[in-house]
Length: 343
Image (cartoon, rainbow, N blue to C red; front, side, top):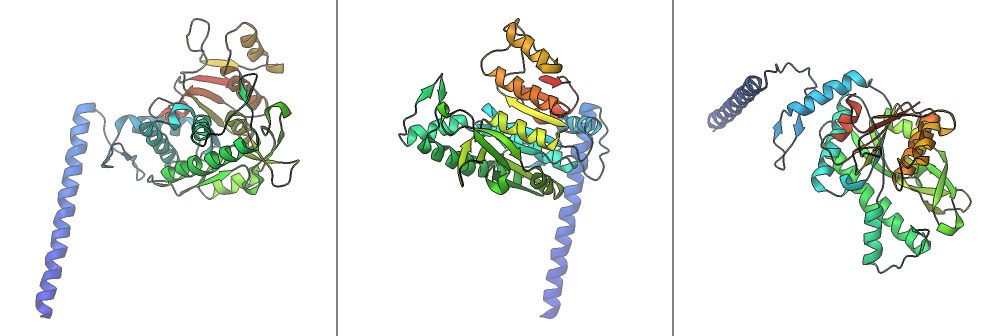
């Protein structure tokens, strides 16, 4: 009986060996086919760039992503501080959600651990409607009363925040992602911005040391823009996501600050992309664009946030289209993608 069992074990091990051989042959043939089609030689280092690019999660080499990663490695030093404001259509479309999280995973593989601050305005509006919470407006802006604040905190710190962290955690190459809000460890402290708008906050202090400790442990912080009210014990304030992300980028003296939007970048009066905006003293470049009508509406706070960030020491800010595949990698690759705001 022992001899029969030993024979079965040997047969099982032989089967596993044959399976491994066939797998290696298949991979070799796949790479050979890609080399013939693309004229590229696939001589990747040990940390070969492998992406999950279909719903079946079959492992395959994405040539375009590999090229982008190589350019990111050339353009961004390992250990650089990257802050990303995640919002817009990229947060609502399922495919774009997956692509964004895959970009984050690819950065983690090359020792660039990003800090993410997310929005959620449309999701809050949807939940308010579902719960039949009536809203009032001042100058076209929603007033955040106590009931609205309760819903906003539930949506931002709960469903949205945890989904983003969970999606990032599901990707290969990510050591960990943790969902937080400005309330946790007093990451973002704020004061009430304008009593007319209710519980809307303006950041006054960011716990950068806590964020740095997470990044040093290779943990991706995912931060919801709900701040701790400095003037009310245990109070919360809803903060504009662009503003919250800008405050975090400034506190960390980020090398790169990415603002994801639903347009290609800042456009001139002829609707042509402005690739670079140089900010002078007193926000000179930005004020000129505002005064001549080049930027207006929702683009003004984004450009102002970018200008404030570079003035405070952030090296480079990109206002870019979050609807494009691999948008994060493209923005860090050194290619012309969106509008770069710099000193």
